[in-house]
Length: 219
Image (cartoon, rainbow, N blue to C red; front, side, top):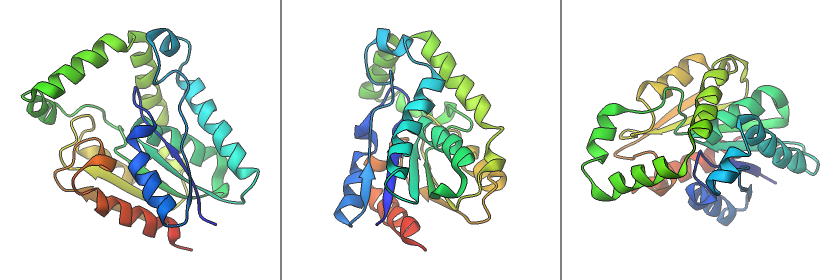
């Protein structure tokens, strides 16, 4: 049985990865999603959980799957991709294959942000997130970004790296950095044309879905 753990992003939720999880289930995979502690709730809940709590919550889910299955594939989106790197470095060959979606190695893409600000709905989204997200939670996010640099070289699992060409939250060079610095011998880069940050919801998401299924289906 092909078993996957999917991890959502900062201030996001399971909806970010739900289309991919549904696609994998339709093709016979077990796809486990869950909510990271403090990242989708109120300001008070976000203040009660930091980066170590986020990693610990993901580790609990992984441990539960590993108690029943010899190998689990890990798929992380955005901040979830950073957490996936932490799990991969710690659990070694208990994790079969890795898929890193929109990984914020270098967060924020000013050129694409300026484009999105021209759209009223995106400007409103930025304002909502700024109001909702406590500065402490944002600092925890950037601490996680910095700490993950020490772990990229420790990743040995085959890794599929996916990024949208128009991602406003991740700089273009993030994907190429992963290709160069992950310790994996087997790495593949997939750039999704015209996609923003939410690659599981973009118009070309079928490219990602087929690639992800093919990646985890390899022996």
